[in-house]
Image 1: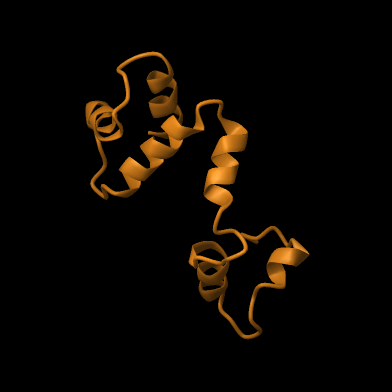
Image 2 (image 1 turned 45 degrees about the horizontal axis):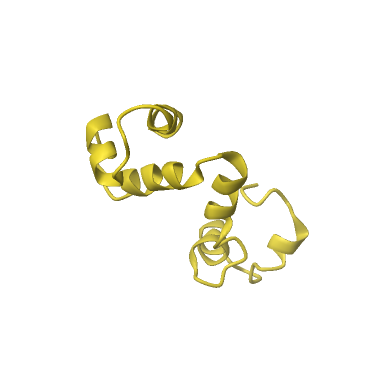
Length: 91
């Protein structure tokens, strides 16, 4: 289900692999079929994708979460404009 039944992606799964193993291989190994999709997806969705990607990476590196100001500081973003948009959409 997580791969949407797309044959190209399903071909990347080894017979007998669990769903977790398949997702790990396809999404999180350096040469996995979907390894570059994070950047591709954000660049296709957002005009200022670099801001959104920076926010996601900052949040991912902080399991306890971050305040808006902590996100701004961690990402080196300005305090208004597109930062408000990026933080609202992701945070």
